[in-house]
Length: 435
Image (tube, rainbow, N blue to C red; front, side):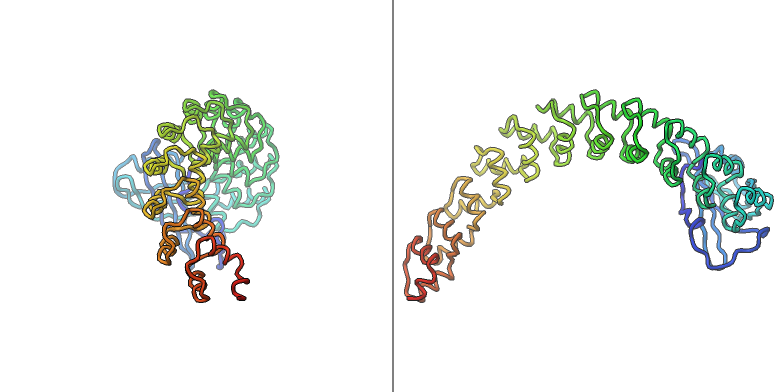
């Protein structure tokens, strides 16, 4: 079975053509390249390209060495001129060229089989264009293959779809195996997706062994796409995570919840986390290492809720250390979260201390909430209001008392007012303006 497509097959299968193809019986010529690759198992890469009236087509596929014995023999021979032939039911391709090391190249000439066209007409394909005839040859689509597929109910497939079936290995046997497991009347495109993603009958059997006895084809595709394997489900069950739905197991896999992660979280003091909790831990970066660091900093026995809130709001071990260095070692995780939410970071703490406000965390939070900044404090000091009480600063900001307002009052001969008088003047703005 061709197990990968090296170049876009759409160039052979789906590109619209604006010119007329030659009459049947004419040949097609082009260039070819091949590589012999060793990576795990030996395989061949065969690429064909051609040009006709300004249009280009490229096709490339990877083959096991026993699928193209003619080409394999070339690579196992000597360097130099080469010639080989691929005889398929749909036609014959003659290759000539050069081989050097693990690469070979040259020209090819395709000749279509008229007998193949007659047999195709008997199967309902009476008007095959030459480009489709060539493509059926390249991918070795046989009338026996088509007849077997039609016998399974797929009687109206286009030649394009027949080629895709051949490329991805959608065979009568594959369809029969799926039917034996309860999956019948499958859309052709879904059959191709199943093959692309490796949803084989064997895989379906494996998943049945771990509790997924009749998942939908969509669920099976999602399993394979997101790496849900039999061993993964077994490992989760070994740490007590079992009886999961298809959606739950996929969600766990997407977010990297493994048995090892669950085990290490249990060792870190969280042995009873349900699957959704583990997912949330992974989403927000709550790891066993994070739990251990927080414990070292004095935050013991944190709940999963507190751990998640800490991570969501950026209460990292680094932030905790900085706040402790600034004299806030007594704060709870909830206090630290509130500090982070309102931007009371170590830099803000230092700014306030330099201005003479070594105040509790609750006051710092209120400063941040109401906009009491270092700049505001300094401007008020320049206006003659230095070393104000924290509560006065907060109330001034709440009521909009600023330097501009103080200067406006002075213009109306209201000078040397206390902070409380300034606040009352702002509250009763209309009264003093009318005087």
